[in-house]
Image (cartoon, rainbow, N blue to C red; front, side, top):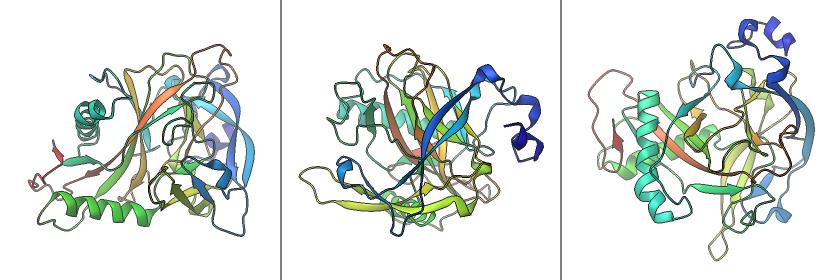
Length: 306
């Protein structure tokens, strides 16, 4: 960790590096060299084609930093965000209440002109929980990944713009975000680790295929990214998250001057008591659009306009 501070990497000043008490050491799964494209399934992991490269890494509690992480620099941030949702397992309530809450949050935090949810939210449960693996895509992701490749992110941004606007204009700056929230009280036995985007090099990224294998429906695939190990990667998490907080992180930013995307993974916190309530969480993905030239933008149908 000190080595990284001394190298002068962006956003890694030694003055606000975490103390030893703020750092845990845990094993995370990178991707090993493979002769074929890694494939992983939302539900039937027995069909995965994915070789892991387990590594022990230092994961810093970002709450302890004097200079908190930012979306445009490290690629992630934690915000206070109480929700009015009473039952996150009720799809109708999530669609009616949580979707507009999250779209509004993204606009407020990022300054975007408009934002729209692009995928069905996933509720996930730690392996000790009764519902773990019983619902669609309901097991924590135990390997480092990025939800969108650049090509998929651009295609999705264009697709959503065309879908909600009868006369879409040129695609300007856009960004994809993942909003991750715990549904269980602290402490979390399986937190989410996020990697400082500015410590990730293009050579570390490996194209992969996410397979959505919902029973009774045709399978579909989407290009994502997995990660090769580098000693330069710097990892963070937020200790003792509450359901009144939201972790926002970048999965694709079109502005090259900002944090591009954030690798992330679930991990076992070695300091967490064994008898805590198993972690439950919800993640939801949003694409935001920005008026980079300062003009008054349209409010496309279906978007939340800020």
